[in-house]
Amino acid sequence: MVQFCDECGSMMHSDGDEMVCSSCGATVSKDEERAAAFVTTDEQSGEELVETEEGANFEGKPTSEDVTCAECGHGVAWYTIKQTGSADEPPTRFFKCTECGNRWREYS
Image (tube, rainbow, N blue to C red; front, side, top):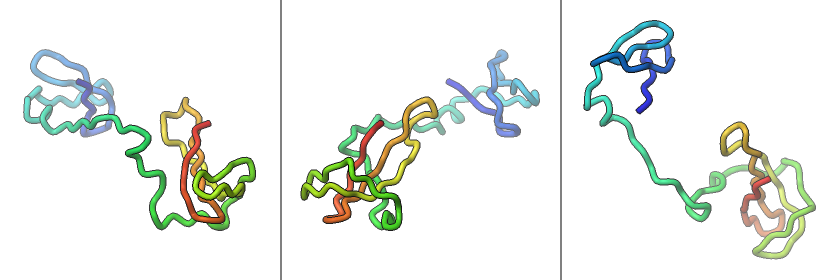
């Protein structure tokens, strides 16, 4: 388990019954209560993820003519680009069809 310092945010290391901050030297005791405060989640599949907020305003954004809407077959869509993964992964393009409003995403 990795623990970060509450004082400065640096990573802490184990030293006997304590966790010691590598930067500022702050210490905290190793206890099960602190470990129980951490939450993990299962990875979501692409079908479970929400692409954008329902009220997201795509209008006025650049349009892309190199796509085809799966719902209506229209070939123009507004799009926005967001970094959804880690920094070393390519960004994701989110589209909204200018004809029917269908939303989808594409990974680069």
